[in-house]
Image (tube, rainbow, N blue to C red; front, side):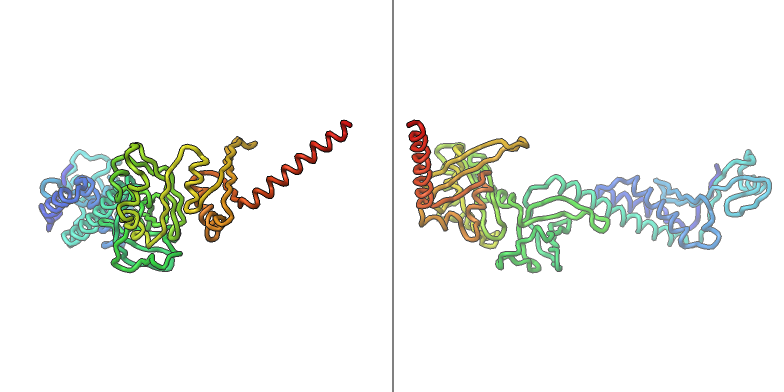
Length: 390
């Protein structure tokens, strides 16, 4: 079909710009051209209102080699024109060079736009900017979706009543209310402060992906130990479990695959430097490092440190729902009872989460009284039965 190119076209300006951006930003070149064409059509309809908005089909094409732009509408060939915006007489169609046209055919009619050059530049700018935003968003989503559960550093940008906003390079991330440590006055989200975070996921926010971070997740402690302790990074020392009350206290159970390596000592470091470095990052959050034991009773004794334990009795059962229940009765010296329980029950609570056992702590004196009472009860029962036999 014959086409007449619009005048005042940007020639190869658009082509050069698209090729340059496609190469620099790793964007699909053809997608950018198509976006500009769509933008040009939208801009034409917006700029040249009136009855031209009634045109059913407006299209635009950019020559991929020369940059020439062709804007046209589709018109139906008819004997008598009723809808001037969308119809053309057969005589007029032939005058445009469509010699073999018949009634009912659709032909392309070039649209003359005096300000096409300005319109094209505006459409190209908007389309390219949108494509850049889309490409950047896609990169962010792809990159950080693969980093969930990993650690990243960022600079605090600002904060509001609920969220903290962090610059992590190409992206701005968010620390939601539940990802913030709020019970520690040393934890401050001051502007320009650099902190470490755990990547939790990527969410859509205002049409763009937003990386969700956390300072409270227990995995953050694990990742910090991996950074500070070479033996963990090398796989010689393994973190078996972590129980954390963010901002206050954390218990970490470690195990060494190599009998010549002290797992606990490796994590503490010379003069406590390694664990202190992690505590500094976590606003002086206290960290207890204990040895993981395969024997549940020994592990529970370790988990209740710094308290000393006299005895641990464990019981593992399955309830009517098929769920495994782990219970431990722990006996401690009377003077160790408060230490075993901890302030507001924190020590035993963390030990329970670390080991997976429900822990009931009793004083030696109380246990002695209960044992004596049980012994008396047993003797009474035996004595009664003996009396009945007589």
